[in-house]
Length: 364
Ligand code: OGA
Ligand code: NI
Image (tube, rainbow, N blue to C red; front, side):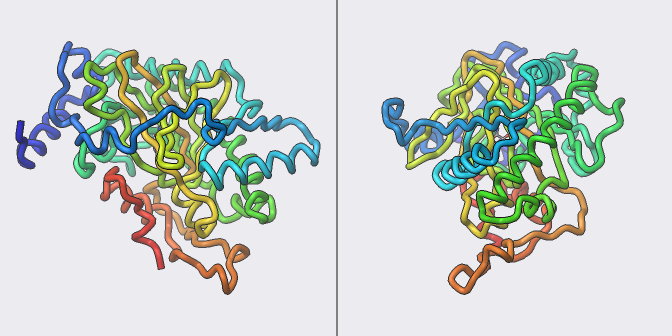
């Protein structure tokens, strides 16, 4: 049925005011999804997914980091594999990354535990004021600006540079999120070292320009959906940040756009999914691309994932970043102007996940 904009706006407000997110709708026992969640058919189906499983071009890269190994030969191979993965996919999975299975499992459990708290307790954490709440639970970060609503709820924790006070965390996340976050920060620094080298730079280069200055650990909760083919868990987007380290459970649904195909990122026990975002595309002057991905809604859920985003997001910082000087030459002049993370992320949020790249706005 035709829904005019005014209607949609009112429905979004009513949904927001429940403070119970998509899970609240599912708990109410709906068998058809409310219209605000219905995505246009063109956005859901295209490009078509065809069978890719027997085609070597579509084998999702998996890299053994062996972070504890001090073998130069091994490291150089890893640097080459990362370069290849980022030039072709923008994504890869890592194993032997130094974060234990137990910590990963407890992190997923902690996030799930938060979303399964009693409604009244959970509502107390609901907020869209990301700048002033270091722990903010809400549904659809771009609810009022995005073109369609996603079947997903979120709890975002700003961990670096200034972590929340322990009391600010909901009890299921209080111990495990800081523990996971500090291990993710360690891994992030290792990855920025390897990424710097894969760009032909000094190992410390990306950390020196501020890539590891901010870290946000964001729990995503995708409730089981009665009509998953009509909506999306997360609409097509590229991440705004420098780097994302994603922990996903075994349900599946994450897909990466590769050679015009949506390719599944197979849930792999013990692995983490790594991808670069727009900030890194910008500082690499387009050598590495921030690649589009999406999450399908599913019948089987809830699906839980934890995305750790390296950026200072909306915080005021003096750090500006632009294309790295060492990468530039007469043939490769800077393609972007210098910006702060806040400037980029504010524009990203205002624009919403509309399927086009916010990077274009910052191009010279
Ligand atoms: C994101 C994202 C993927 C997932 O949060 O930006 O792409 O599997 N998440 O939840
Ligand atoms: Ni993403």
